[in-house]
Image 1 (tube, protein in one colour):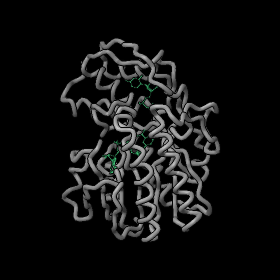
Image 2: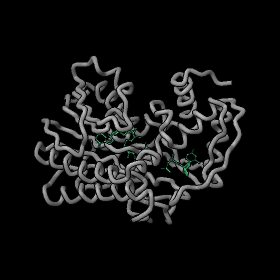
Image 3: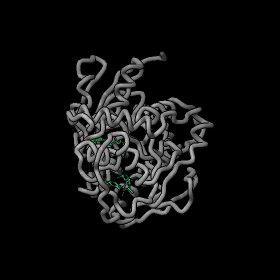
Image 4: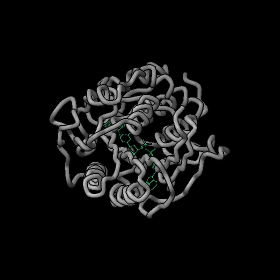
Length: 318
Ligand code: NAD
Ligand code: UDP
């Protein structure tokens, strides 16, 4: 184990943030989890509350925060379209004002700061798979723009703080990530399908279900985030983190029905506005610079996630 660091995780009570806090504590670091509990929950971090190396700060990243820290992981932002679209102005504020507050903190303390950016910066991509130098095809005014443009603005701020103040930055562009710890009412496709299948409800397919996504298991993703944070970079470079395996939503639904032995049917519903038709990361940069690639296949990761939801919902698969 390396030297113990003081690490701030914003959004630390959320799906990915809480797992990240656990990994950092296990590595011997002191962790401050800052969260406003918009989509996060105390349950996610209950296991760490007894540790004297864990501190919870109930706060909003839109307010300035002061603490001597060595590293900052900025994960604060609802990630599910349902939740980030519920209050789009708040989503934009979290992304922009939140990023500025944390960049100010990093600049003052000399901490390295990592931004949890997203594949959404590529919008509904015209280049496939998506490499980091693709500039994207993003609606400025649609219902996803509060998140997509918010995250793009945050990346811009990160680069400008680096150029203007020498702030030590890292940017991870995260592709769809799933796993144990997601909320049953998160609204994203993997949790929706599993919860629906376990309850015997119809699986809601938006559009014709032929749109594709690439799903990365939580543990693989968080491993990539920690590697990126601790990597050397002469010049800032955004890095895609995701699993290049690409599936249609129909294939995903079939796999979930199979793994849960569910009798659920498919219910086709309208495709939401600006829903990307295809998405798959080009991860050659992560492979070359971080020696990272995901090792958990979709079926294996779904099995773990189904087992988690069976426990969480207190149901046994039929
Ligand atoms: P999540 O919604 O489970 O977690 C987000 C956390 O941020 C929650 O605990 C929430 O309460 C907190 N939060 C929201 N607004 C805040 C604010 N203003 N101040 C303080 N805390 C705030 O989502 P997640 O899947 O864990 O995603 C974590 C991060 O990773 C997000 O920034 C998201 O955009 C990014 N990301 C996730 C994915 C994915 O597939 N999971 C993909 C791309 C990017
Ligand atoms: N989707 C679906 N049924 C659902 C939820 C989502 O068919 O119950 C589709 C959605 O339209 C999108 C894909 O699944 O094409 C991934 O959606 P999600 O909200 O998980 O993430 P994002 O669209 O941000 O990639």
